[in-house]
Image (cartoon, rainbow, N blue to C red; front, side, top):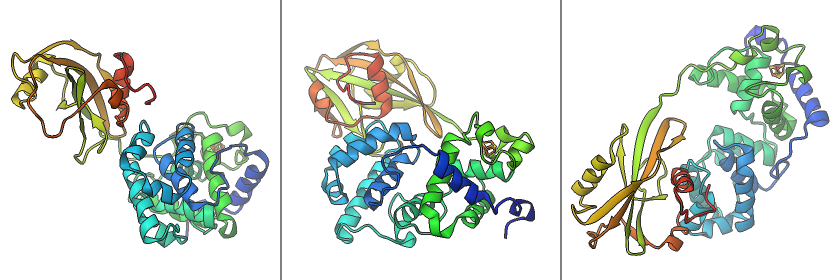
Length: 367
Ligand code: SF4
């Protein structure tokens, strides 16, 4: 059972939340109330690490292109990755395809309907499984995402760190104790909406909040200190020097295939360093790799450095333009493409950012 100090005001929590949901929750999202597990699953995968405002257009585009799981399963990788371009965290896209193909082939296109089966799917963790199970099938599994951590930590004044095993267990148990078992889907959506529009991370709307007479964080003036996190993210810094190499009307690109960020996306052949370095050093390195031959190229233009913040790393990128004056040596993993053909490939956001500030941009549509 929960500690006594938290038990006292749990009784009315669900009722108050559901009442707020009925009377004041105006948040609209196309997948809200949806009962097609394919659509709910798709929305949840898109929303992992993506804000609703950004995910909306991608959700609509996916549904338009692939109205059911069999259509998604049958699509070529390239087409799906191109549609995902700009959303980031590309492992989600790989898992999306793997799961669609698994359900289409092994389950004859029928989405699983129990929590235990749903949580086995690739790319689906306990949160996503609880969301699908409760939204579609009204199964009694509480969702515990960033919104839920924040609302519960504040309303009940919990200072156990949410990024510890103890904290995760504690909040999951509390969330499940609060869950009205016969109304799981609506309640789960309500608590996430409440966290997104009322009990927001910064500047929560405490004056109009239905919990403002009982909220422990508000009473103790610790709203901005909750929830607590124990670990500070370790930020790795990386510098990516992309060599935009041209021979005639062709530019060379390659696919990223290592277990790293942006796996399966495309880039210009790149040299990575752990700190900023000179263009001459990068070109020397490219010569050592036999990408360039001394005297066989000209390079007299570089772009500005663009920075992109990812969850665990800060990536800096720049373009170094190279014009071959001799036929380049053949590289097994390079693809020679024209400016028009570049548009068919999915590139990471960093490359689009670099394109935006160093015209011409051959892929205007990318984000
Ligand atoms: S009173 Fe403020 S901090 Fe407490 S639950 Fe409401 S919005 Fe969140």
